Image (tube, rainbow, N blue to C red):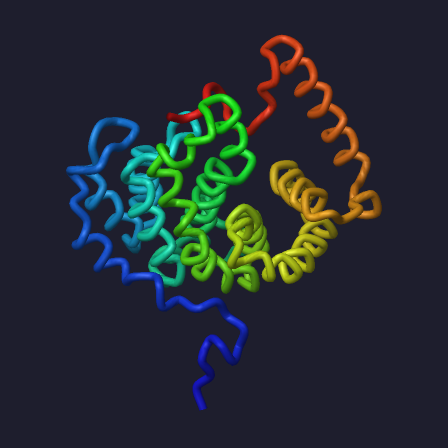
Length: 267
């Protein structure tokens, strides 16, 4: 008997349109991007499913580059995020990523790159960024920042596509899925999922040496009220102390600007 997602504990994917529906049903040319408008996005998004990994890599440069600049969420970000989420389970996005007779990918796998982008975008729209925006732009920051609000509303849908990849056979994919899932789980409908993410976080900290991923996971555990002292290694402690020192130095030079934006808050 086929089990439904409610029986297996999987998040419901019913809210996620099929990728062709997103591609064909979006007026891309009317949407603002980092480089103008999104008329070139359909061709690039289709390229993410090309059997040739080199073509996919080029398509990712073009598609994600259109909506990635200075931590800003653009009009085109939401449909791009929906499309990316909708293709995470497509076999074509991993075709040819591994060379013959080797378990080492010939280039950065497309699946990992897409998960990284979803996670980075979710961090650019997380609660901390909202708090910073409100502090610098006023209480109506999120109300007026329609694009960020739209992405934040989309978080449960994106999470539903990322969640199955927490058990992917590739460790790099599992780690990228976890780092993407963490900021998505800030949504009120997803707080109950944090317990599961904590288990995956402990696994990552026991196996991974990736500095970025470890920092993200340790920050999340701390924010969720967990003592991470037993999970940190010497490199984690050094990185945390260095980061705190740099934040303090930056705050002393620039005032109380300690958030996640690389330059100025988006508006």
